[in-house]
Length: 509
Image (cartoon, rainbow, N blue to C red; front, side, top):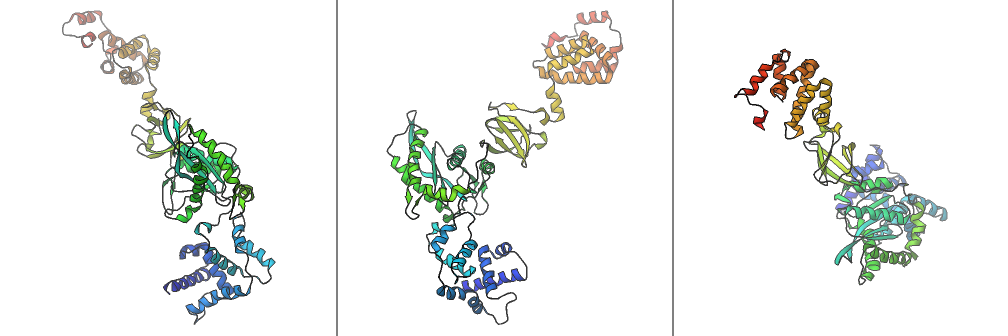
């Protein structure tokens, strides 16, 4: 009784939202948490019964129910019903709807059922079917994919290894493809799809995987998160991925049945054979696969191949002209050195993205980095561990200038000043254990030259060489004190060489 009152309340709300609110069927279904077909059915019944909104005074729930639903039972008892099994079969074809079948039925039978009665009686008939048979599988619409639970074995290098079988089954025709792989990793998962599309000669409208970790990174009843590579595959082939709902066994009935069929007809008969490679396993599987697809299905009186050629094949999407390049994705955080790590190698990104979360896409040839779905970096792939691949434009200005310098470039700068400056730069680099230790000193000399000019820089280099001042600070003191403009006297140099309290550069070596 409570359920009945709830149903009547829903019907009244549907009528109110339609006539008073002017909402669409989709909006009403969302607001009332019911299906669109249910909303359409309620509105059709109300229209045939001449009921609008507001409801006539004195019309209670029992009278409303009688006026809306009694005609179904009364009229159907007098009129000949369609062949519901044929209706169920025809609904699998692409483009075939209940409305179309009702119109064809109406033309054949002058004493026909109304459309709402037609839909109601079909729903009642379909409830009597096995749950896995009630899902309307349209031609070319869905391809169900999964790995089989059973495994096969083969011997390689004296060691026994497992082989995992990928299975793809069409919803409408049950046409099947199977292939063995050495693992259930992402590459095997993607390769299985690519080979299945090539075997079928086309692409479905939708892929329906179980919530396997390879294809679905975060299972969710309402909005599961897909592996980025899997999404990229779907975009390339022009299809969509619709994972089965968590804890919804009816969604998995077709793929589980397909897997069971492969296990029973293909894998189990081969259990006693000894294989020495994945290729040998696949050769044996494909031989039995042809027999499976050619075998007549008793409940359809047709083979899977015949069903596929009749239903799915004519409406398949064409294969793309270019093949799909498998790419691996990774989520990473940019380090303080504006590099991200992939396979123990470091790739640069613009320095402004430091501490930001980015997405890495890696193929066999290229490593790309994306920030908010925009590509910000691209590098040639390098698997050298611990090494860095850096683009100069990704560096801050100060780092870029520093990175662009080398001893040869500083010597070229010194050659534009004079021979003494060249000699001073050479002494600066030779007096350091590592060339990079002299970069800052030389950069300082360049700044001094831009401030005091070439002539004073050359004169200061002469005095610095004489006294052994192979440093930026020594040259800076000479220029600031104006000593470069004081004539250098030889006796001073002689005193310096014999004075016991003046230590030369050899003292520190």
